[in-house]
Length: 476
Ligand code: LLP
Image (tube, rainbow, N blue to C red):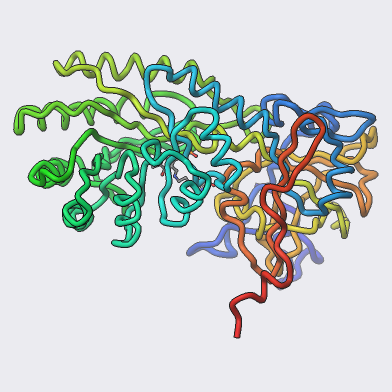
């Protein structure tokens, strides 16, 4: 492994100094990483339709989204700016609705929930998953039909459960024994009969293109199937007549690109359905296989077609149910990223440009890990382009970094930008519609950017930019 070394040959202090960051861990500073920059794209101005919003294009050189020119968007709303292509978001809701016409689709609000996206989801006829009292409050504030809401969470408070029961949400996914007891109490108190699902940990861990079947269930979510906890949860719910047990739930992970992991999950869930039928004479009518459907972030990533996955899941559930001698349950899925992810683009203004001789150019933008922590947190990869104009300059190996006081503050670790990039240019990062605004924070007291929806050449603020006043609010 040859890496860049600095210092005079033979110098003790400098001859093994890496010019690249090395991995942390017990061999910290002894393991020198290989450099693996991606290939420069064939077209530095290109907008791959699999990665960029459905309405994205270029007009007179500048990127347009929803018919709006990014330069106009920035002139009106400032930077950094989250731009959401309303048509992309809504059309993906419709794709799901059609692909699961005989089942239910619940948008996972954690990907990106605000009052306006809740309205879009409601208008497009989908249900909604929430996993906190706050997310539930957003949904209820726009009149989202409670019967189409599912309440999730591994540690729902009594107050959150009470709000869900009082509101009459369609499903509550039970995640602990404590919660089942609390639900029984709350159902009595409010004279309601909540519809309950049991979150089952099936021992399948999905990770990008792979799944790893695990013998143990070393995580905080759900009731373990292997240990018998899930069967005990069913026993306890069924022992409380004020609760209606309607089905089983499983969520195996994120950025999944095929149905193999779901097949294992469905087969394992079926064993529990059979056990419940034999033990209690109860046939549960619903199966929720969760979300996790991947999207392409960079060239070469593959994303499953919604319909292909839907047909695959339907076929799996039918086959598994029939071979277990059970009626085919109604299928629910909970996509988050695959609805919101590609609709979102983040616009930044380029500030400092620092060429680190012989290595790469650091391009600093006016946001960073406060508006997109995914790169720092998960090593996520993104595609970014010069957006305010086209350029035919040579590609320049770059790192798009933020303005926070941390070296890990990267938006895109390795990318190629045109060598004539200049301060004041706008850069657009694709695929930021899911889990960027949701995970946004105020590190270094940066205000959270505005979110604007674009459609038919018009833009409107759907979440306003935070102000200095917002940052100071609540402080004594
Ligand atoms: N349903 C349940 C129960 C979930 O826990 C999740 C995501 C989803 C549905 C939606 O998954 P999706 O289709 O969006 O992959 N912050 C991470 C992702 C965390 C996902 C947590 N649960 C990220 O930025 O990649």
